[in-house]
Image (cartoon, rainbow, N blue to C red; front, side, top):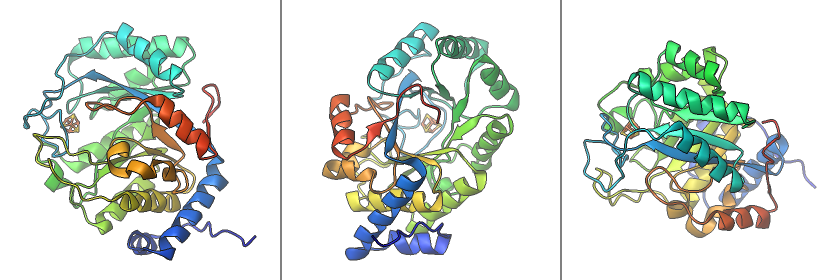
Length: 322
Ligand code: SF4
């Protein structure tokens, strides 16, 4: 068999590949799948989340159902108890998830009570042997991240959402640099960082590459790729920019730009990829979210486990090192 092309690509080639079609698209899938196989084998890491505090966010992210600037049907509730966080970790574990993240709405967490509750959950998860203990709490100071780390955190999730050049069209209530700083601080404190974005907001192909180059420069450890599920009541309601092929090309180009990173397909998978969901592994993904998303339902996890098996992949066992 001919040697597969597993070269690292640059931004210009990435942009070119995002525009491919026909036979070139199938060649891209084969190439990205080979790179995924080389660096990650055929194992799929599953991640489950808890919407631990929902709604009433001060920020105005155009895609988000939880912004107080938009009128949506998203649930609104204060921070749940540490007990509920630990319970949800067990639930996603039974679905096959190795990773678990506590996610809160808001630009940051507020007050000592929230911090104490989250730290208690992290410590309980660590003591119970949960391998990956992740939070997504918005922007955090060095002191806050250090405290979470000392309580048991080993992975911080914080998306940049989109390219710097497009961010002002997505969010006007905080600066891109504040998000970048949170990522840099978490890395400097020795945490693994999960950081990606969402596509289909109106960004250009060049801006999709721009985000990838920023993530590569930041040396983030894992990259969650989300595809817009346009929620009624948000400014992006009714927007459907992406085809399943577009999504697969984005996954593939991110794999070729960051060959040895963990690439997860997260929100909007079912809505945007539809019958092509199982192609995400050929396109280069080695992880995906399982169970419900923050404000929308995921599909039955049994369907996802069957899909993984049918695609010739296997779920990463919970105890295995990353
Ligand atoms: S994405 Fe996060 S920061 Fe932006 S509105 Fe939603 S909850 Fe708030």
